[in-house]
Length: 356
Image 1 (cartoon, one colour):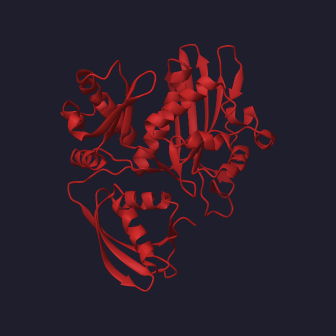
Image 2: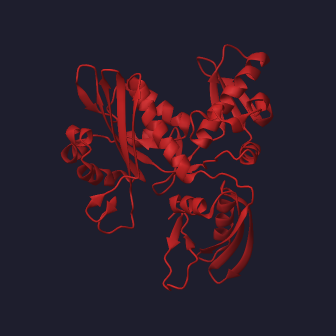
Image 3: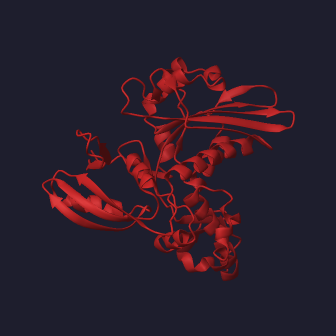
């Protein structure tokens, strides 16, 4: 229940592991009052906050491709409102207009369907005391961790560290990056990835290191690797000024990796591709598949080209590469990738399983 309580305010959870991020084009900034001049001044800050979430890049405001975009940030605003104490300005941006502008500038666009990551993070303080981050963590630190994940649109959960976790995983397992016990304990959480990380003080500042491991449900021998060897998809280390910056760096490393993997960047020439989906046969399913595909940032246009029995074909214009689209489809819990029985068949087909 505590894990769900963390996820629900930020995210709308699907029936499987991947998570749909809500309010992707919405930003909040604190203000002193409701005057128009201050609101106009804050809109570029809100746009940067949104662009960080859409690109996965914390330094996107410094990207040369952004030149001139922030100076005319008002044109992307669709609505705004005030509330809260301290007073907060909530700005809703026009997602279609914003994505179109980003594509024209060839900025990466990371869609709302994003992987869920379970974080096993070990911390050490200046006195050498160590602890695991969990739902039992200090309230202030936990709130800061959640706020950073919200700002980045990064679905993150922490272990409960209840009796079941305590039996399977110890602090030293996480600190020493002993993957096997952590991987086994992670099974119950049904995340797309799990992260092993630690943050500690040194002579010249604070340090962090992390390794990211995928959950591969289709593997029979080993859900997180190949045979008896568990392989990480990303490893990063760095030096920062303090503990808070170290925790922020962990999230930024994750966001950067996922954006590189799942975001799409418009090319000079749009590629064409045919997608083939199997459905149960109802018109409602066909409408659901078409609506889902039209909502992907990797697809600029779509047309139904064939319907035979339970198989429907779509001709799509791609914004990015075919590989980027394939990775997005693999992440979607309502889509199942079908393996061809015939070795001569090289076209990948998909099955729409909806919210089963």
